[in-house]
Image (cartoon, rainbow, N blue to C red; front, top):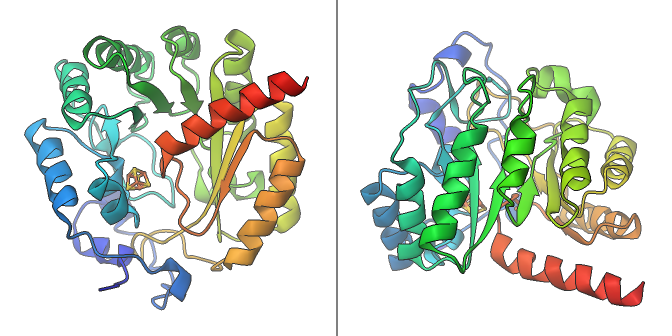
Length: 321
Ligand code: SF4
């Protein structure tokens, strides 16, 4: 059976007190057929759910209401979200609750690592909420999670999807020194949208963060992603690609924005698949090693397979040089 995962259902959960008084936004209830995905019902999905719950972990797959959860969890691919379920930012696109976060769980690094080992993951993606309340923005906690995975699951490659560590001096250096295999930081949207979509962040800072990773350790793959359908112009997306290439970013992901609740930013447009294909072609021509652009692309979707391709693409480029 094929059903639509209704991301607007999340409005029933009282999890966005900071957004409760915002005016309702128009909701495009009728999603185009290319957004329809299978409902999560398989055995693999249930098993992944059990492992996540029994280790007391949080996943961005659930928190963000990701439409790919049925497919990913069936294959035991989950993206762990560390440092709690409460974020200190209130981005207009994001379904994660905002507020005052709880103290860090000191057992979390071991729990994440044990779950990675139990699931037999060859590649894992670790992300987090923004923790502006912590002196280092949670950099040390990222380091401890990476180290715990290296100890318990030495064969697993580690991809991190980090916050921007805005105004957190030396935080980035600390995380890069832990040598994740892939460093991902999403720009999310074009700069003209930042004030309305990502008000707590700064476009240039995020770009510079990615560039600095490469400056500190050129062996680490860098990755960034955006959502489209938020009112951006095509030329702005092409400019953003150029900016990312100037920062030496290897991998670009582009996916359709979906509105989690009526209190979130509206979908301005559903971008058809052929436009994604065109963006992918242009991005490759600009020199990215890897590009994933489709309506259901998310930064962590197929991350393991993509990492293998990313490595192969770098090797091919080196051979050709
Ligand atoms: S695409 Fe990423 S966030 Fe979505 S279900 Fe898959 S692993 Fe989770």
